[in-house]
Structures are given as structure tokens and as C-alpha cells.
Length: 465
Ligand SMILES: [Zn+2]
Image (cartoon, rainbow, N blue to C red; front, side, top):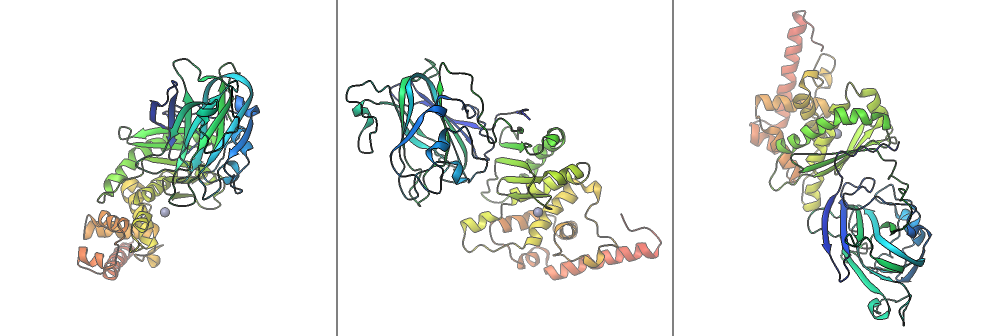
């Protein structure tokens, strides 16, 4: 279970710049897809670091009662979901952060300080100033509230941290490491003070969800990973299109499927995600670049699903379908990631809604007619002819879309996709593009199938595939 498939690092280094008079360096890791707190430049969270036995005190500001106590910051346990208030400490909604003091109980050589956070939106990034003290300065104030500059009362300013991103989604996992690579330690300190501020004031929810704070003693024992996802995770991480896309297959919940996922699923994702993006363009569209596919055990009868940049895979269903429908179902879900039709409604209140049968039909058209045409999995046969309606969804609609593509408009699917993504889908578009109403197209398609099946039947041929 400790196997760690790490074929490429998950996270990007967004910044690594000297930030204060001391030679502290702030390294930032951001994993938008958020998986297991694995970053290039920031160590994974630990459970036996010097903070684990330290005393954490709220010097200023108010805890949000929906969140955990300060103890969650040094219990060596991480949140396992992206919105898990009780596993995080955060300041009260509507307030602007506060100050947290860490008392290490004695002066130690502090090698580095690492802070970890996770949320879906603006509560993910971290913004704070870090101060440190040995407590020996005359006039030292151990609990300086806001309004008192710590540097005026025996504290040293170590670093200013701000992980907010200018472009792209704020959400995901962040790891911050404050260290001094040149000397190997930040200094000899007993006290640390985090002056935490909110990430935004557009709404009441700008206070960061902090999951863990680690203080590394330069002379401490080797660090052991925190529990939660870290340390037990099986992650297959890879890129595509020269690093433009980054994928994580999280097989933590299905270790027995990791080998299959690496050997069979990875190449399909690598090849097909960029293909899907290319075949479904629209003006100004920026596809998701960090995609996580996660095996789950809590999906009931649903084989797979997609939401945003995440694809969920039902591990029980996959075990049964490895040699049959497994790969095709992932292609179908990746189409949903690329479709991103929720985007129109987020950007434009007047956006039209695209009917579900068409959303699913496009995903199945691509899957059955472009990804795996040899399986002939979406044929109209004697057995399903009576259900052959253009809006029957999934593979039947997929068959209809394939027919319209071949007989009326070879670009109908990309055109429908662009309209749906831009929130301007309308039935009239079918007539604009093919000269026939949707109903008329549906009739023509069905009649053609009836005629083909009847002809085969009367000639004694087999029509079932
Ligand atoms: Zn679907």
C-alpha cells in the first residue's frame, strides 16, 4: 500500500523568491486537482515534526465554529476531501484572519516551516506573514495582537507568503515551504507567529482552510508522513501535449487496478484528451489542464461520472469491465470534461440549457464512432429499433449524430458542441445547418434503419451484430 507511482510530479512551482531581509525562501506548490498533498518543491506533510508537540495559541482573531480547533493544525492528519471544514482550522466567516502563535517549548534550530491548505475556491490559497523569536529579547511580547508590529517587540520577520494565482482557478491544494537553503536553517527559535489574512473580501468566505502546519527541527528525527491521503496514496501522474496537460490517476481506493491503469488507461487518456479538445473547439475556450481520475468505492451502480476536471471511476464496475467497456467509458467521461457546458451558465445568465440527451449523445457518438468504431457498440438493430428516437440519449443519440454527420453535415457535432458551450443551443440550429428540422431528421434516420433492417430480414441475412 505504500507503493507510490510517481511518474511526474503533480504540482508546479509557482514561485521561489527571496522575500525578506533574512535569507528565507518561500516555495509554493499548487495542485488544482488536489490529490494527496504531493508537490515538487514542498515536502509532503509530516506527523512527527516539531509542531506536533508544540502549543498553538490564538493570539488574535476568532475561530470559525464550523471548523476544527487549532489542534487540527498539528495532529498529523490531513483532510481527505476538498471541503471538509472539521479537518481544517479557519478564521470566522466575514472576519479578516488573525494571529496564531506556535510555542515549541524550547529554542530549536528550525530548518523550515511548511503550511498546507485545501479547498475548492478562494479558501484554498494562503496569505500570511511569518515571524519568529527566541523569546530572549528584552521587551519581548509573546502575544502581540493586531495593531502591534511584532518587529517592535522582539520578533523577527521571516517571510511574507501569498499563494494567490493571478489567472486560473484558485481552488485545489497548496503547500508552502519557508526555508533557508543556503544555511540549512531559518534560525534558532522557540516561538513562531503567523499573521494570517483573508484571501479576498468579495464575500464572507475568504479565510483559508488550513489543514496542517509543520515545523521541521534541523536536528529532529526523520519525518514520517501525515495520515490521510498522504503516504498511502497510489498516484499515477503524467502529462500530455508537451506538458500542457497534467493527469493524475488516483488508484488509492483500488490498488489492484493500478497496474492496469498505468499500462492501459494512461495511454488512452494521454492520446484522447488532447484529441477531444481539438475536435470540440469553440472561441476562447480554455480546456481544463489538470485532470484527476479517481477510483472510488462509494458510487453504487454508477460506472463512472464527471464533474469539472474530476472523473470518478467505480472500482467494482471497472474490475468487471476491464476487457470490455472500461476504457470507452473513460473516453465518454473525458468528453464531459471537455464539453464544460456549465461554463455558459456561469458566464451568462441568459444561456440556454442543452438537453441531456444531446450532452450524452455527443459523448457516446465520440466514444462509439470515433474511439472504438470496431466494437460496433451503438448500432441500430432489430432488437432496439423500436427505441430508436433521436432523443433516446446515449448510444442511440450517438448513432443519430453519426448519421447526421455522414449524410447532412460533417461538422454537426463540433457546431452543436460550440453552441452548447456558449449557451446558445436551440432546436432551430438543426434546420439552419441541415435544411431540415430535428423531427424530420429523426424520421429520416429511423426510416432508413427500418428499411435496412427489413431488407436484411427478407433476404434472410442476419441483422444482429
Ligand atoms: Zn455521460
